[in-house]
Length: 185
Image (cartoon, rainbow, N blue to C red; front, side):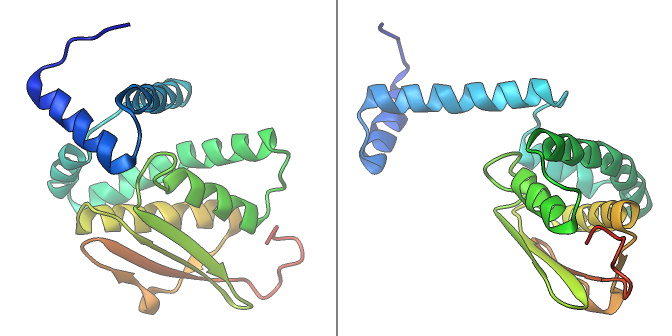
């Protein structure tokens, strides 16, 4: 099968082909398969695809109060996505499983909300940390989303004095309840 490309696109393909050590045919096949998976994922999850830069510009104009409202609404959707994934994978609704699924969804492998994201669970708290490439309003959105998710699902409360929310990073800590026997932690 042959395709016609403008010179600029051909040069990009040639440069990527060399840098990735793939022939042009395999590079185009790989790119098509990745695009197809992204498109399918978006359709299955009833989402729309928006450019990160555009989203960054939009969220920059929203008040913090509106960000909290949007995060609360979105937390219901994200919670549903995670619960459905846990059911499909026959996982329990324990905090570790929940956080594994959240970080998987938020990572570059899935929706790409974060360049990197992770968590740690200790005896007394849960720490969630991540790096993204948008702006401080996006960091605030993620903080509010996680606050809402973990409050709704596990009744965890954020440790306000430990917050580290910057232009492109978050470090959040949540206090674990002392009585964890029935808390699915």
